Length: 469
Image (cartoon, rainbow, N blue to C red; front, side):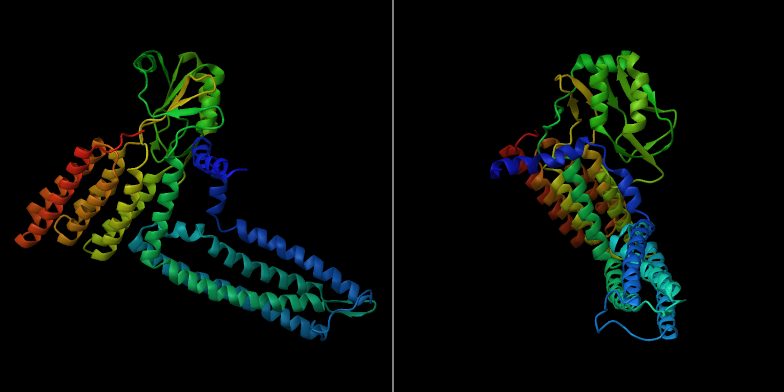
């Protein structure tokens, strides 16, 4: 494969992910504390079966164990395995209880989603799994010590393996303490959310807009006759249950629309709250609505909470939540809010380089088959700045950082329409500062930052930034 073919393949990867229904079941399983421990318990049982068989073979003199394998009587073996099992299960209870307490306190500052991130963390799941697996292994080994016709059976290799697992547990315990101490630090929490935002942007708003499966997307407007047909002769498909829309299978919807020679227009995006009995999509011709209704059940995933799957705004909301909590009188942590603003500006700068217009997807026949809900650049900007601007209205440090961030985002914009959205935010920030900041020198600094935002936008308007694709 040539380098050029490899590059084309890598560029198309996020676009294919955009169409396909994400593996939401994998995401649901990842946000549990039983999957990884269960897998490791199965591994521990399998390991015990192997070592037990080897011990049986050694007991019947079918083979000889190495010199470093533990020797001793049955009583000594029982005492060792009892000590290991008791130490491990006590450690699990104490460490995780203290950890939950620390995370509960941290979530009061960071927001309730902190607990969900803790459960979702693979390192935490592996730690619990290793501890529980060692406990199960030790208990199985304890039960295998017995009296046989040839004398007392002592599983020497099993006991030695349990001791080795105990050393592994000690290393995992040290890692876990370090990992937790690091993960509850606010800069780490914020940076982790920002990484999730970047990944979600790459999937949801790919740089290229062509697909390998025969379907394609265009950012052009929906033809007027098609829009009229959907509005006047289309049939609404209602939601079957209430909840947050977590994921949409665009590829499945395109296929069903192609089969039925129909057009589907979605009325919600992932992250929206869907109410049962309210329109979920519009279908034209109306006769295809019944079959599309069944397809929507499989192509839409609804749940009790939002996820980062196909929903970059959720990551933005998480950063905003931390920022406004930090700005509240109870916390009064300005520097945390400034950190959130910095990461929000980085995410919006990346969004400004992508196409956010209404997605118009075509099937293999070349006809329009699916129209998704407009993601709206203005909505993302307003969700990022409105609440922070309102919470930090009378704080010059926050106001200045907001204007500096807007200037950085303006430099990444690709159209006058994007810059108009950002200038609107800058004007609101300036008006709020003029009303609530009493110090004239602070106001002078704020006005200077505002003038820089306006000047940057004016310069790009004169030069003529590339039009959105």
